[in-house]
Image 1 (cartoon, rainbow, N blue to C red):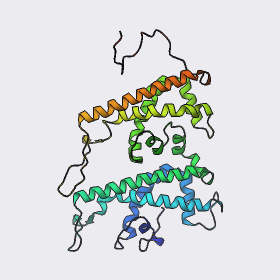
Image 2 (image 1 turned 135 degrees about the vertical axis):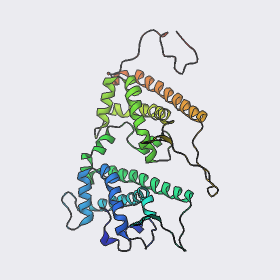
Image 3 (image 1 turned 180 degrees about the horizontal axis):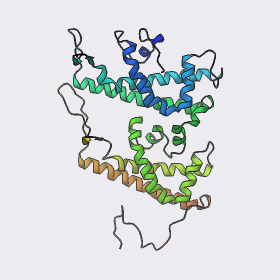
Image 4 (image 1 turned 90 degrees about the vertical axis):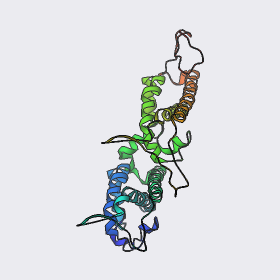
Length: 335
């Protein structure tokens, strides 16, 4: 675990990232830290890098095998990135449990003459802050690792790295450059499944199976073919906008064992900032706009491939009668 009791007699490590009260005992929050670590940190680092960083954290001298004197400062910085994200995710994931008292007589809300429970809007705001800071911190951690890969060679063995390397939109920053999602890793994770759908059903259909396979193979390499590097931006733009068009109606939906629910925030007297879901008309407008932009970029992708056909021999230039076409997005209707 990347927080230890010997360094948190007064929550010294935790207080580097959150101004928690000294009345909190480390033993009460350590089970939640461990749970968050297994759920969020381990899957991203991969078991091998996770174990190595853990060894360095537990005992930095002598240096564990695999860490050099030159790379050890990088591991110290990585641990700080891990801790910052981890403690925020811990308080988010365990927020409700930390707010109750469990004993033989049942469950109780903790309150005293000097300390009152938060208003509901304050709880919601605090939980959202922990959540956003935690998930955004994961992106910062991953960006640091990838910017210093020589120091973290074991990261290349992780399933997460393999998946990211073969993704046309590999991370939050890449998506945010094309469509503003406030650099939110959480939003990016929710949209990722729709990115895959657009890749499978629309990008692959346009490129053809052979060129699509070549693109996937090249981007997974350390030094991809220059021709593929030039092609990628033409693929990314329609991919992002068409993903937004597909995802729009689904982002606020939660599926539980009790059914499907739409998550929103209602106004209260204490809350001056109100977040509400878009109306059906606004959703349709956003989806239509994103789809139109995406299709326009698909046309640019087709134009680029046609103009550079010699560089992409796998691509088959569409042929046939100009009177046979899809009517989608056209102002005229041909039959």
